[in-house]
Image (cartoon, rainbow, N blue to C red; front, side, top):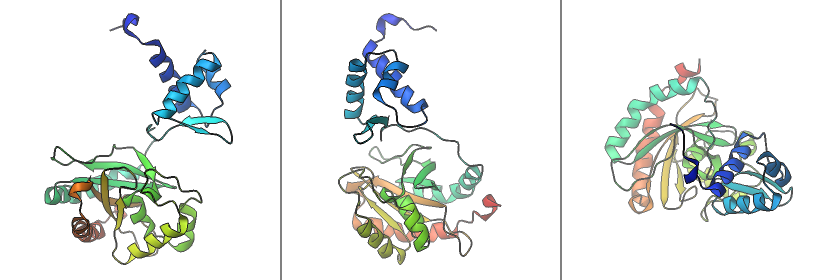
Length: 256
């Protein structure tokens, strides 16, 4: 069925074209390039991009004067072939955790300095926290990412943690020394916490899925929920269960 163009709001349509150009581009883009690619005057393109920035759909680097997709835009990337097998192996444990705690259970894998969500079992509660499959978040702001970092050696952690740590919320740890101290304190308990560091109003606890000795983990499992339902005591109880559950999941067959 064709669309009736009478009902298309031109500024919204053009804004989406600008956003699409950024998503399709190979990197940050200058205003002049974006304006030319959408046949917009530069002043008009600037106003639309400014509005998209205010909404979190576009970011802007003042040093380079380039625009890029913002934190509210998720661009799906092809998952590695082993991801589907890891999902199959981990799903029974995820279902058990969801039944036990009735909060959202997430499964993620590391991709460079990001965590990629590859599976999720949602809570039946009306109020719950939920990530989208395929979504990417920084390792440093997520419990999933931090749980994986717990298993890495010092030199690999140094490579995985960016020098400039972006704040996702006012609670994100952005001081590198403070962050590494947080990781060191989490190693002994074998689970990591996200205390509204990735999303306001949501807390999360995660544990890494074991791999053969000498290899850092590449996958982790987490439980997330609204902050008011995830007290410190609840997080600690979930963390102990998660650490045992994650340690019992054998994904070696998925990596061969």
